[in-house]
Image 1 (spheres, rainbow, N blue to C red):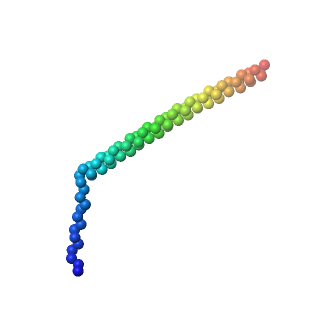
Image 2 (cartoon, rainbow, N blue to C red):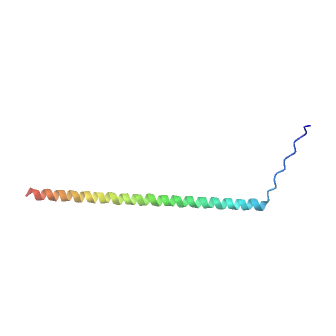
Length: 81
């Protein structure tokens, strides 16, 4: 009882609906891109502030250690008398 299959009709896609969907997709992509850019700038800011903190910390350590050395030296000089 065969016979050829009926060609399946494509479901009608109204252009207004598809363009609206396209707009929504574009908006979503833009939003994602903005969030991505924001995340990148946030990460960069965190990295920069961390680097600054580390620099300050190392310079603080350096001054602390040099002060400590000076104090030790003064103590040593005082003991020499």
